[in-house]
Image (tube, rainbow, N blue to C red; front, side):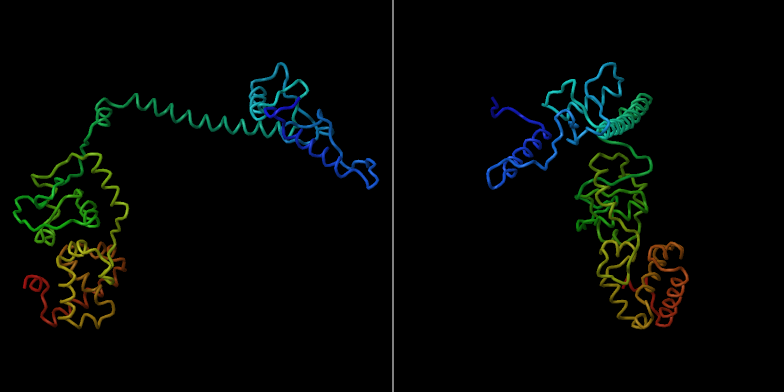
Length: 329
């Protein structure tokens, strides 16, 4: 008696369907049983995995005696695939299924060896770590010998002894610049006054008495949050797209002051890429960097940069414009 809990393998299911189809379609109009055109392999001539006939193929028995460790592993995989079907001494698979299972076992063994070897090396290396490094990994803060930071507070300017109460948020791009150029980290709540923002004295913070060299996990995660988007190049030909704080960091003035200078010296706009040349000229006056570094920042060839700077210098001399006096007027 077959009930709802009984199961059947896929091969037997296909054979049963073929028999039903033959019974339904094999009769002629007179009701006589026709000759079946289906060739059904016997149950013992079928590979249990793929269901193909093994009447004319090499077969591999599933249950065997005195099998090797490799063969037993292959048999275990085959049995797990055929569950809950019962395996008998007459059960077998075709050679293709046997070799396919063997290759799968070999790939799995190679992957296991690849995982075990690095774990063993890591365990060995961990055993050789000095005690202070192990203790450091469990500490809430770490000491970075080549980096320092400001206090994570918005109550005062990051520059020491500054009493200015009007403070500005430091953008992520400016924080990335200071970190890249001066090895100094400005936490998210750090603030700066406008006079120090344009003073170009960020390099003095590293040796300031208020600087700290301990970093928490939160500080390090914050660095990763903005440093990945840091782009050291500058695009002064698209001023409106530049970050205001980054512009003031390099120029020492606001965008509005820069535009006022362009209006006061219209000859600059008559020069091809004159805006870029003026920015390069002011940047060199402010930082004193070499032409190679400035050309790298502005992404222009060095000879082009030198040509633009010479043109702007001639214009400024001819119009009696002094940039330093202009910013201080």
